[in-house]
Length: 323
Image 1: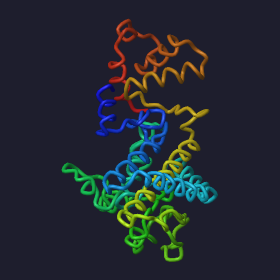
Image 2: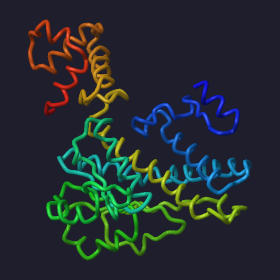
Image 3: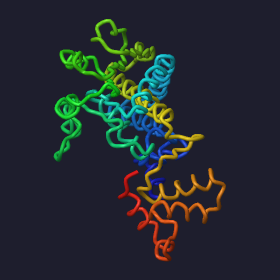
Image 4: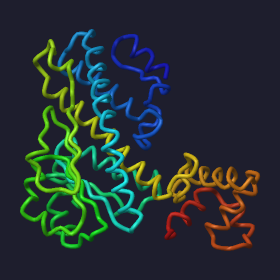
């Protein structure tokens, strides 16, 4: 920290206060100001990359605020979409995001967070992006491209599944085969104009007019499209985080704001599971840990070795179990 403070004084680095958001950057980005972290990094990167003057920082922050207001105006329609997603999950179905570029990758991140955050299964919510891992410059493996969806998922879609299209181009790409999909189909579109009239037939269309008045009077022409795309990505993040979080709440994954369906996959989650048992069962820390270990080892009579074992050993056993 001292070295970072020296670097900051020399204008060689920024220190982002954890109170604002960066503290949980390795955890779920939907929690504990993770979105604020993203906004801060976006703003700093744009200002540095495009050599904007410092007064542009306020304009950039105002842009994100305007994007947030645009998303909040769509609350009534978003509620309908949440209920649709929740009904699919409750009936054993799945939610599939279909997107491209920044919004597609944002959807991938949203889907990936559902496993550790809500104890969801791998297939509950999945994201597929045009280009697959090539979009991420990854050299090994691919399960996330639109070709993977077409080959592995689309032929097996059921009536209780939900496909969420995040881009007009992807909608038109799948238009010839949409009528043969027995699942529910929705479009979530962020544009600067209403394009819902040209959207192929879907069960539901959420078209949000991303009203960014600050961009219309933007004093710096360079980077205007980049800034718009970043505002669009953060708006998709808010929408999809809200969709997947609320759908899991309605599914019963959350009780009194606690994620109660916890797979004990690391030491942090071991402690969380013990605290959940302690809180809702009115037990001491020792008693809660005892019951957690009984669950992990599948016995009412723990051995001395099991009781005295290291948390790492408990996690290894727990992470190999089916829920």
